[in-house]
Amino acid sequence: MELRIKNETTNIVWDNVVDILQRAGMANYSAEIHRRAFNTSHSVVFIFDNETLVAFGRAISDGEYQSAIYDVAVLPEYQGKGIGRLIVQNLVEKTPHCNFILYASPGKEKFYEKENFKKMKTGMALFVNSERMQQNGFIE
Image (cartoon, rainbow, N blue to C red; front, side):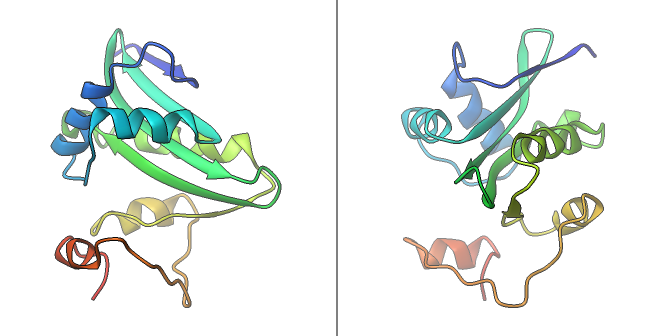
């Protein structure tokens, strides 16, 4: 395994992003929507094994005191090898003085707890599609 980190969006094959999200069991949108979301994010991380995209994540931030991590996805065959940790640490390093929020896929909370994330008591959200978020286990 020869991992390479890329922190910008040039030459990304966005259909591969969609494929990884599907294979990781995460919600996804069209390749074009992901391209726009990553291009307008504060920080991005793409992980390649040689030339194959195997994982990624992104953060949105004001750059001063608040950040949010989204779309951390690792191909199933690469999970458990420290790649998710590498993505999260890379994103946190971009704005180390910020608070970070995220919502984890159900069952992945322990991963983020290992990275010192804490459950919030008062987190609230307004979803465009609450029914889908409920079906996916994000809300009751």
